[in-house]
Image (cartoon, rainbow, N blue to C red; front, side):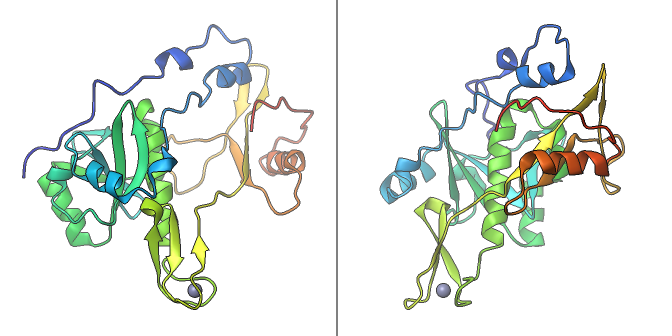
Amino acid sequence: MSTPSICNGSYPTRSAASKSKSPKRISSAIAKCSTFPYFVDRASHFREDSAWIGARLNDPTTRLIVIYHSAVLCHEDNAALPCFLSPDRANIDLKASIFLGQVDGITYFTLSIHTEDEAHHFSRAHQATFKDYASSAPVLQFEYRDLVSLACFTNYWHSRHRKCGTCGSATTTGSAGHRRICTSTTCAQQYFPSMDPAVIMLIEHEDRCLLGRQQHWPEGMHSTLAGFVEQGECHYKLKRNEAQTNRATHFDGEDQLGW
Ligand SMILES: [Zn+2]
């Protein structure tokens, strides 16, 4: 199999958006390193257009992100660079591909593989290796993170919704991978990807900040504090609880930077 084609050159960079000028406070620096602009055009109006989706899957400029159990196919010699494949070089049935969106006119899909044999095949054929997303995300090239996180989330959601929660029948995909439908004709329940609300906070004091880490994380990996929001829970109270759990015993206030 040929060497995988890599998307480059036309992908916008966010270096200009992420630059900050001598921030006086750490939170100011974070605000200037906003996650916006978000470059992926979800192009949701195409999801029901099977002819358009089919044409894009036969378009040599289209790119695929391959996922195996929450791990991303990355270049063997550069774990920060996802291995974007063109459809003609994926050498696999693409019917199960999920449409992610477009960036600068390039269409992106993601494909989940399920067996170890398939994973070995992709690794050998493309001089690539599967990298666990949670641990590799911090080192992924910044401009690719939106797409890769979207691919991982989408595949994870599908892996957890293969059975109908109402009647237990198998589900199948619809809308180019943006919903699942119960195959029982008497049920036909539909499921859509949803997100769990969470808060993330940066606790700072003068020029220092409080970070946390989990025992299983790679050495040197730390994170700002975060937690999931339970039903009816106030986000401010949750932040205070998370802060105090992590030894910030005096939580005086907050600057809300965004939702
Ligand atoms: Zn059902």
